[in-house]
Amino acid sequence: MALAAGVIGELLITAGVVLGLFVVYSLWWTNVVADRVAAKKGDRVRDHWAHDDTPGRDFDAKDGIGFLHVPAMGRKFQVLIVKGTDAEELNKGVAGYYTKPVKAALPWAGHGNFTLAAHRDGHGAKFHKLNRLDKGDVAVVETKDEWYVYKVFNTLPQTSKYNVGAIEAIPKGSGRTKAGRYLTLTTCTPVYTSRYRLIVWAELIRTEKVDPERTLPPELR
Amino acid sequence: MYGWIWRHLPGNAWVRAAISLVLVLAVVYVLFQYIFPWAEPLLPFGDVTVDNNGGASR
Image (cartoon, rainbow over all chains, first blue to last red; front, side, top):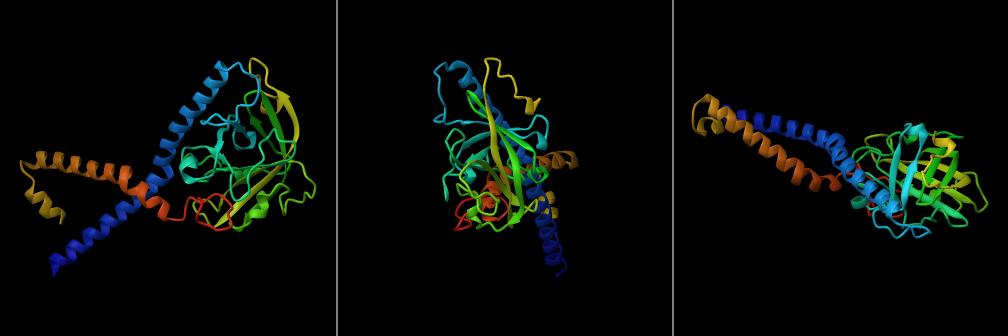
């Protein structure tokens, strides 16, 4: 009897330790792994850009189409943008553009919504601070030869995970009713859960050609 | 349970402690490398997209 109680006690303690380790894994180790993969992929994209003289957009590059810069999430904040929002992609510490349920319009499209998702916690936690964005904040998409400067015009701090309208070409609930060149960022909220979604809407205010030195646009300096 | 393992390890206390440490590290490695990555998608902590069929895409 005492022996059985001892074994059960040890098993319970073990379960507690394993759960604790799972938290360490989720919030720390997945970031370590994802940041490593993302850095490697990002370097490969920049390397590719540096060695590819053919003009034009590089949206077939399998490593990514460019980078998202958001000064409100950190002065040096940048995240690689890849195609697709499947866990397999997002777990690499990148932001993915939607291919379903509503296909994203790429930044150079005449009009449409460039919709991105990234992890709030774990796996790089690239959008951990997405809640810091407010009206007037700037987000810049960097591609091989163009800077796309967006300005946040509305946010939705908490919405249903089924709110697909938020990523439509003219995002529902954003306040905009005409076609435009929009950028929509989505992640989960509150932190450490996936109960709701946090949405940030921005619109293109200008574009700038990338110069040979890749000088940052004034918004990022 | 742990007492039983301890009693069945060979060597003196130092050797047993060293073997125990290796065993613990091996368990942590298996957890981080295989068990946790497998268990993670089963838990609803990583969904960041809006979707009309929820859960299918994470």
